[in-house]
Structure formats: structure tokens, C-alpha cells
Image (cartoon, rainbow, N blue to C red; front, side):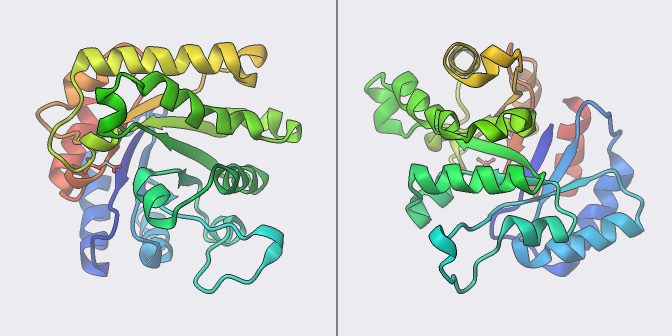
Amino acid sequence: MIIANWKMNGTRRSVATWIEAVTSNINVKNINPCIFCPPTCYLEYARRLIDENGSSIEIGSQIVNYSFEDESLTGGISTTMLKDLGIKYILVGHSEQRNFLNESKNVITKKIEEALDDELSVIYCIGEDIDTKNKNETHLFLSEQLDVLAQLQPTHEDKLRSITVAYEPIWAIGSGLNAEKDYIVKTHEFIKKYINDHLEWGRLDIYPAVLYGGSVNLGNCEEIISSTDVDGLLIGGASLNSETFSKIYNLS
Ligand code: PGA
């Protein structure tokens, strides 16, 4: 799975140009979905262009909202609305959203549950900040973020296959400093082992894919994707250019 996360970038024109170029440049493999996450205001437009182009690109949403006890929420977007638009994937827990919206663990769990109820696939983002890394507390920090998944209602057990984990060290996001290969390998190994040993997945023999994100570019993508236990990439800045993104996809 290779994801283009455009964050707060783009215009109708650049969305259209990108979809057209990527559709003709990538060799889509069924085992490796190509997922485009444009800004929310362009989701429907992107959906329509992808359908008209007969493109194999899938669409993901960068955000979803949740309000406890159905309180009204001006500007909110629900999983049901996203499903209605034909969106298949949804990013939950991205560090920029966690920080900006001050998302609690409870809210993240609820977002995931609602997404699973609406049959959306969840990309659950986790990752440590630089202080945590420097204090050698990355594993503890990640295990606490992964424990959010242990809070899912037992009724969601059959839907655990719809969750993918994306490991994005915060210090690597947008900084131009990707994590070293060795660090990525060890961290992905830890994430997979923790999920297997401590969460329901292990009991059910489900092995979720774990993606890497954080300053992935054309120069480092091959090394990262070839690392043991790295099952895909979540790409921000380098996904904006259709040519660069297509090359990264084709190399992955
Ligand atoms: P980046 O962003 O590739 O620009 O570091 C990744 C992300 O935040 O998803």
C-alpha cells in the first residue's frame, strides 16, 4: 500500500493533473493499492475523476470527526458521509491531527470503531516525538498508542483485517530526515511483535500491514520499502509531484 497524503495542498487543477498523470504512469499491482488522500474539499471531485478515468487509484480521507453523544459539530465530517462519497480508506491518529485537534485516545478509538462500522479501511498512524526517541522510550510510547486498538469493542473483531498501521516518527515528518534503515527495521519488528503478543490480532492469526512514513522520497524509497517488516509507504511532500510519486510507486 502506497499512500499519497497531500495534507493542506493542491487545487482542483493540480488534483486533476495528478490523477491523470499517475493513472497513466503507474503499474498498479493488486497487492499494492495506490491511495490518494487529497484535501477533504476535493474528495468528491477526485472520486469523480478517478471513476471517469477508469483509474485504479483508491481514495482516502485525511480526516474524520467524532462527536460524543451525537453533539452537533459545525464543520464535522462523519464516516457515513465519507462512505457515501465512495471513500474506502481513512487516516486516523496522524500526529498533525493528534496535536492540532488535541485528540484523546477515546476519540481515536471511537473514530476507528465508526469507520469499521461503515466498512472503511483504517490507516492508524502512530509515532514518537524526538524527546521520546532521545530518552530511548520509543517502544513504551508506541505500545501505549497501539493499546488504543485493544479498546475496540469485541463486535469489531471480524473487522480487524481492515486496519493497517502506519509508523511515522514525528521528527521525520516533513523534516527531510527519514529514520535510518536499522531504526525502521527494529521499530517495525517491535510493532508487529507487540500487536501479535498483546492485541487480539495475535489470537486471530491476523497480521496487519505496517507502513513507514516520514520524509520518504525518490532517493530513499527503495531502501525503506525493501526493509524487513515494512509493508508500504505513507508519503507527504514527495507525493505532490505526480512524476516523483509514480516513480516511487513503481519502485515499491
Ligand atoms: P512527509 O509526510 O512525507 O512530508 O514527511 C508524511 C506524512 O505526514 O504523512
